[in-house]
Length: 89
Image 1 (cartoon, one colour):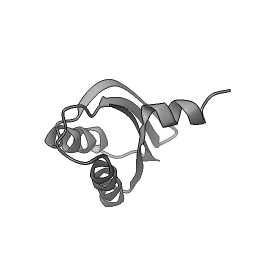
Image 2: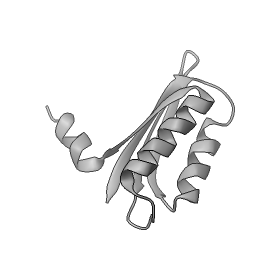
Image 3: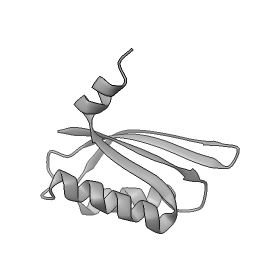
Image 4: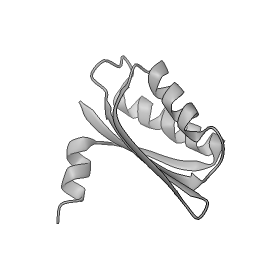
């Protein structure tokens, strides 16, 4: 199963490292990643593969959300098919 992760917030050192460490700890593979910083605001989008995680999807969502609160950014994880459906023109 693939998912889409978005991370948005004020830029600071360590955002990518902390998100990637959490994903690695959950055995979630990063397939693609794009990040940009615009006038001090950090924006990252990741396509991830959750096939090999032993953690329930909702628990991964919760862990990412908690990490976001800790590092003061907004982190969201959605199933790729739901994300695609929501963003069709």
